[in-house]
Image (cartoon, rainbow, N blue to C red; front, side):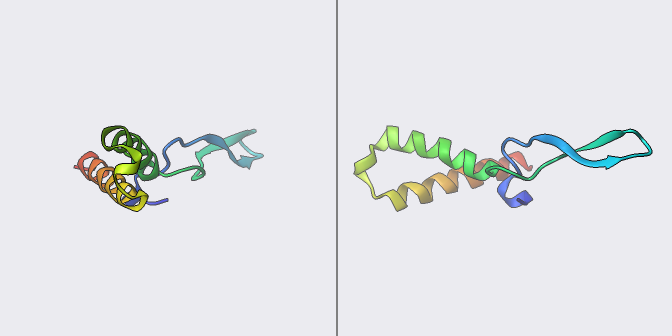
Length: 79
């Protein structure tokens, strides 16, 4: 995941490295799961389907619009 996709939507903290000298685990964020861009697009898609109706446009068109909305959200967030 990278900054363009907003990073991980739901990062999880998991033990990543064990340091025997410290006697505890170092915790780090994983990069698992969906990106923030995908999550925002899914939410936008739900709105598009509700607003316009699933069968009023082809699925590829709805997906394009949904990712454009997600990209705009990430760009605005990064300002």
